[in-house]
Length: 441
Image 1 (cartoon, rainbow, N blue to C red):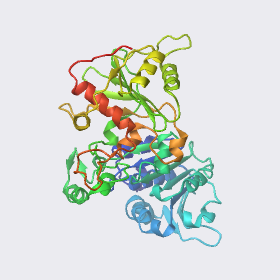
Image 2 (image 1 turned 90 degrees about the vertical axis):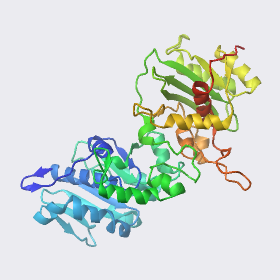
Image 3 (image 1 turned 120 degrees about the vertical axis):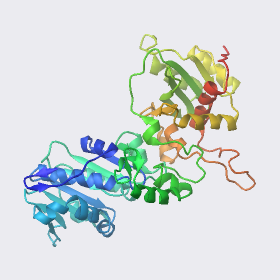
Image 4 (image 1 turned 90 degrees about the horizontal axis):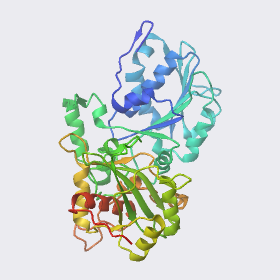
């Protein structure tokens, strides 16, 4: 970037570039350690302050002390180094009347604060707020900050943040899942210090080597960027940056599949899958709810695929692959007017089939994807209970049963696995079953 005689070089890559282009009211950079998340947020904030005279920004963390030893060091030594040296930006240490802040020669201000001393920073209005390590905040903290975004000096107001992942039921992940906040999933390949043209740099080899030495949940979160709750992750090949895709219009010619796992107290799962001509599978719609009967779920499903006159608005499924509950299968078939086929339920080979699809194929792409926003309706009871509310939330917490007496990597923990059962049925149907056998009821 160049402003008058001030020259500063920064080239965003990957999700850092997406952040610069994103104007959503709330956007979160989520990913492993060392992907350049904080640098990207600070660079964007600095650029906005330079280009928009009179803009008010805020750099905040849960505690002001932790911010001083992390984000402000990056800002001072890398982001605003030239501006500080030239006098375009000056540091003001604060007073009883004003918070500490960076003051720009064009009248812009970047206030610095912590939510542990929120009164001082929450009495002002801002155009853009950057929250470092947002996982530390409470949702009340977050929502309080959103009320201060109303300064109106730039064309959009934004709360942007970064974080390393935590448990999949964390309020921040839930906020992203329900669409209140846009999540951008970062990868180490986005950081040019670590990777150049997809190849590890010397610095990258040393840093990634340290992360690869981590074990269990720390490795899953800090190396792979996964929101996981425990060690023993079964689908450790799942990468949100690769396997989660934005919604797109599915061609009419693609084969459709429905997969069902019955439940009432536990979630009932119905997944819609589309298969492209190369055999790649896309989960594009999902019902995941408790406390509804099979006939209610069937009506909900038909409402997604039929117009008011009962005409289908998308191709009918080639097969409905269902759990083996005979009574529920018969009821579902009657309500839908479609037959079902019994799922292949063997666990070990089904898990291996999913694991194989998560891996890169010869064309450089995996063979299974989950579409963002696939969930039809959020189950607030599950959300309140801090349980998964969709398949995406299950996959990053699906672990091996490590109870005493269990052989390692023998059986999965039978908990929060309803979407996982459907995923396994789908992979088994395509990769382990020779031909489709439909049982018409």
